[in-house]
Image (cartoon, rainbow over all chains, first blue to last red; front, side, top):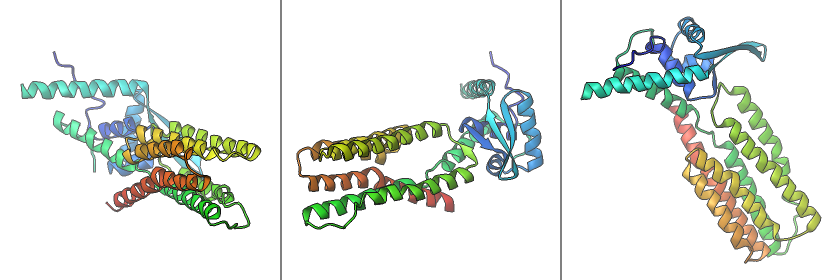
Length: 97
Length: 195
C-alpha cells in the first residue's frame, strides 16, 4: 500500500528549501533565496509554512546591525523528509514494475 | 524561479538531488588555509635544512614566522566567518580537530624548548598527519588522506636520518599534506566560483 505524499513537502519551493536544509547544519535566508532563485516574499511564506509544520526552526537576530534570519531543519523535519523520499521511491518502483 | 507548484515523483527526486548538489558545490574549501600553511612550513623547513647543512645562521629562529603567520590565519578565519551564509554539518567537528592540532603543536614546541631533542621533528610530523588524515577521510578528499600517510611515513623515516635530512622530510610532509591539497582545493574553488 502506498503512503500518501506529505502535502507540505510535495511543493516545489518547500521541497527545495528542505533539500537544502537537510544538507547543511543551518543556513541564512539570503543563501536559501539565492540557491532556490525564489523571491523574498514567496520564500518567506513557504518558510513560514514549514515552520508551522514543525519541520524547520527559524531564528531572527542582528548581525553587524542588519537583521539576519537563519533556518535549521528539526528532527521532525528530517523524519518527514526521509519518509517523503521513501514514499517517492515506492511510487517510482511501482511505476517501473 | 521556483514556484509553489505540484511536482511529479521524478521531478521531486531530481529537485532534491539538484539542491543537495548546489549545497555540495558551496561547501568547497577555498584552499587558502592549507596553501598558506603548506608554503610556510615548507619554507621554514627548507631554510632550517640549509642552515644545518651549509653551516650558516640567519640570526633569528625562522620558525618564529609560523607564530607570526597565525595573525593572517586569524584574519582569514574571521573574514570567512563573517561572510558565511551557512554552516556545514562537519564544520564544528573540523574546528575541534584543527583546534586540537594547534594546541598539540604548541605543546610540542613548549616541550621541545625545554628538552632540546632533535627527535621532536618525528613527533611534529606525526601530529601533522593526524588532522590531515581525518579531514581527508571525513571529506572524502584523497590528496589529504595521502598527505596524512606521507607525514606518518616521513615521521618514521626521520628517526633514521640526520637532523638536516629530517627537515627535508618535514618539507616533503608539508608539501604532501597541505601545499598540494591546497592547490587542488584552490583550483576547484576558483573553477566553481566562475561557473
